[in-house]
Length: 243
Image 1 (cartoon, rainbow, N blue to C red):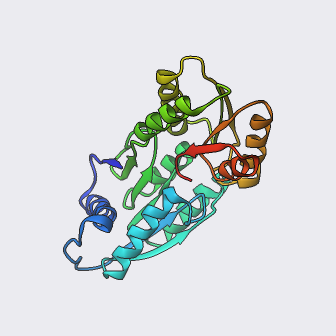
Image 2: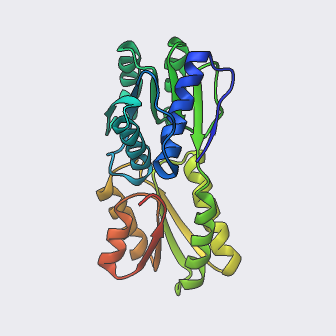
C-alpha cells in the first residue's frame, strides 16, 4: 500500500508515522518502542476477517502487543453510521483514527476538519487534506490485470461475469484493469458487470453471480465475497481480489 502525508502538525505527524510503522512492521520487523502508547481507534465497514481490513487489524494488534499503542475498533459500520463513530472516537481522545472511507469521503473529511488535533489515516481513492487527514491506497489493479489475462485465455464462452462492491474509483480501477488484461489476450471477450452496493453481502453477490452464469458466463471475477461460492456450485472458474 502506498501512503501520503503533508502539512501535519507535530502531534498528528507523529501519530501517522507510528501507524505507518505499525503497518510496515507487521511484515518487516519491530520499530523502536514508543515512550507513551498512542491511543489508536479503527473503524471498519466490513468484518475484520475480510482480507482488506484484516491486514490493518493484524498490524495494529501486533503494535498493541508490543506495547506501542492501545487499540480499539468497530467493525461492520454502515456508511450511514461512519460519521457518528468517527466523532465518538475523536471525542474520546483518540490520537489516531484509522479506517477506510471509500464511499464516505465527504462525511469523513468533514469530521476530520472538526477535530484538527486528531490524526486520521484512511484508505481512500483521493488526496490527503488539511493538516490531519492522511491517506493510503494500494496497487492491486496490477495483479488484477494479470488475473484478467488468465481469465481471457481460459474462457470458452467468451463471456465473463464481474461482481463488485461500489462503483467508486477504487473498485473501477480494478475492474478496468481486469478487463484490459482479458482483452489483451482475447479481443472477443465480453463482460457482464454488477455492483451490489455493499462491501459485505455474500448472498447478494452470489445471487448476482448466478444471474450472470445463467446468461453464459463461464468465468467469474469476484471483487466481493459470495461470487466464488456461486461459481463453485455451478462448476465454473472464479478469480478475484480481496476474497
